[in-house]
Length: 388
Ligand SMILES: Cc1ncc(COP(=O)(O)O)c(C=O)c1O
Ligand SMILES: Nc1c(O)cccc1C(=O)C[C@H](N)C(=O)O
Image (cartoon, rainbow, N blue to C red):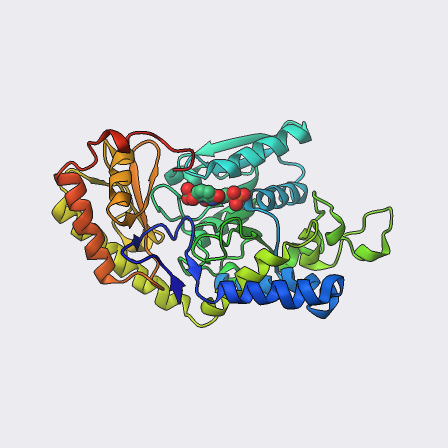
């Protein structure tokens, strides 16, 4: 189902999912038959204009959202900004946005930028991940968390935290970057207010694939879109000079949809339509557990940085190692692709659609050689590249 180079064990699908074999043909025929032959009529004939909502519904199925509440577009950073801006307006008497210090930096940067623009006495407050619940209070306007920590894989309990936050009148936003396609998510059951996520990791949409945003039914028609672009207008082609928000989730659209990228994503969702998230999750826990036990048996000087209990972990495992950067470069040179996360983690993602037990044992065997034979101790593995 996926194109994977011969001889490579790919444990980085948590950062960039591999290419589905069907994607090149699907994108190729879109280019020639739609863009090529239909030209501008493709917006209607091929319904490019409906793509963000149509694909949003397919993503919705993977994260427990009913049809009509998820829309695609832009990057995740933009979707974070939109969610926080709208959420703050739902809770105007409060001034604090709470997050945790394990969150991915762009989420925090986006909030920081937004609060500076608002210039209205807001504060971004960061808790340790394990103290988030204790930090909830009636001072907090918005709680914005990423369910699965990008470095360690530590997983928040979405339902419990959302319930506690709601009891205190807090609006809750979940970033599902490391959850969508990795763990079971039920946005309806946990009553999330907003959720955002990307599609280039577990969902195999390709580098730069468009992000998604979910807005709960109770908020959809009450929120004001901060990024009031024409595609979120009630009637974009009326070209009114005044902005009027579109109905429901449509108002979270901003500008022209990235049709080619969305078509690539459609090809991978054809695969995701056929799988059960419960099966994927069960297999992912098994693979992660196996990797932990294989690595701990073979490399006693690596320290597990991820929760040992699979229920508290996403679909990735990290080990701390003093020479983690060089270690990962040596591992990659020997056919196992994971990644390094500062300051000292070797991170491995487990994706059951194309990784099995043989891959896990194979990767642990090569890691054992890299560590125990000190293959990392080589000047060529010390130079940091721009993207790590
Ligand atoms: C939690 C989280 N938010 C946001 C991003 C990135 O956002 P963007 O797609 O805008 O680069 C990532 C990683 O890529 C992430 O892990
Ligand atoms: N999102 C990324 C990108 O655009 C280029 C290179 C790497 C990444 C990432 O994997 C970042 C990601 N959120 C992470 O888990 O570290």
